[in-house]
Length: 333
Image (cartoon, rainbow, N blue to C red; front, side):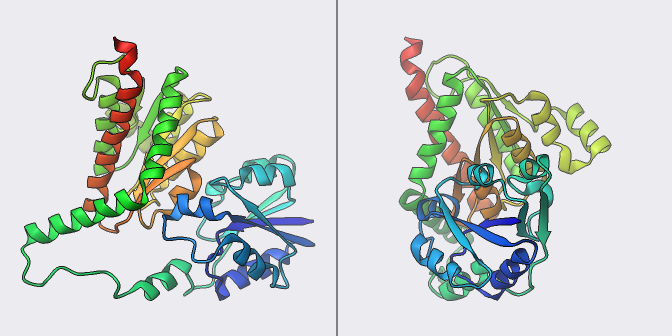
């Protein structure tokens, strides 16, 4: 029986070894899918991976539990899973069954899906953070709140400029392709991200800066009757997925906004959108790896502070609006 799991495996640690050993024990052959270097950069930012794809593949093949390693360039292993048709699909316990790419497909032909508990105390991101500790500059203790906040804001935006322009452009292309085909854009997020969702939708439906045709966009955060009814009847985790189920069609695009990248209702909406044949673009912070790994393209703002992340998100959305204006301005003449 073929077992399949996937990940970046940038820094292999005992938690990885334990997971792969237990995955292999479920079948007779373990195939591991790893994100290509370019795929990791799209998901985790320009500073990753620390080891190139061939080095990561070689390390994995050195483990007794791993029989084969497949490198894939997409954000998700969906196509690999479709081609392999594994009997058993495995992910770590930080992924719920409903968040696992390919779970529905594997179960549709009689396979099984396992979310295996992780060994506590091991995380590639934590290891990297320890290595990186002390490398960040801190504002002088005498700085005012105003100065330190503005300096932090500028540092984040400079990092976006140096490392995220390709992702911003990729997302813009998806949005332009979506509305050019006559499909619509759905947008979701919580709190400040909910405000961003309706802000973005308003820019598309009304206009940004230039006259152009109205573009179809719906914020899933504004219908109080739907939001309260769905939350009351199905639970808050279903508040967006139920709307995606009702409104999305093949070819639409979902903009998923979560500063943490872990919001359950946003992740659920992403999974439903993928199931419906929608493109998904994301906006998150530097720790939003889960959301990023589920999107067709995603911008990770290099900050852990919610305020700085949200400031960058609305600026990025305005850049998308400007690019869309330029695409459609000739149509308005």
